[in-house]
Image 1 (cartoon, one colour):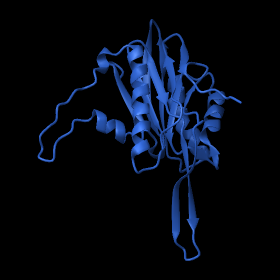
Image 2 (cartoon, rainbow, N blue to C red):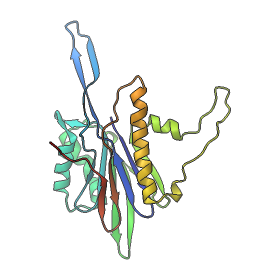
Image 3 (spheres, helix red, strand yellow):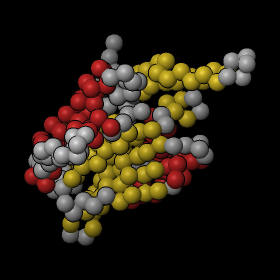
Image 4 (cartoon, one colour):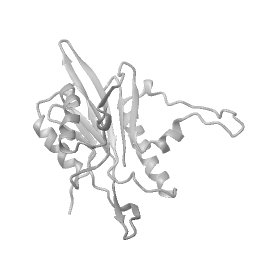
Length: 232
């Protein structure tokens, strides 16, 4: 799986993702028993956040391979085909494109960018669920954040908790409405790194890991704050 996050602020959109892809195998024994082996292999060099030439950000989680190949290459091909598309074009085209490659695909995308509408730039953010052909429009009129993928760790940190007796523990909400871009960068790193560090000690598959890539999208430009590079 993965953890992807997007924060929408008055100053811009911040998108981030981890780098781990976990592979599983399914073995059918002679007696017909099917054995599912989870986490038999993983890579910490997977790209999950992408930037189009027109300044549209795309993050992905969920099904990470098509035809036994990593989904990143297919996303790059999609971007090349729609290199002149704005955020509206991208969010409408992405599900049909990937369903043509794999009709049963179950991948989620977060897509963000700006529309130049006459005198102002309009911020747009969407969550696309390919399996059910659904596009969710995120309200960007107020500052906030969305995340997808392995969200249980972050959910426990940010959700109001109760004791077994039902007493509500003190709740300290995150003031996203006051965030600056630097705050958003710090929160994105915190959210993903906390998930990685927590999973390290849990008896579960280590499905979030590796470097954290962070993309900033502003009305007039987009740039990477952190982006892993190939090396010797």
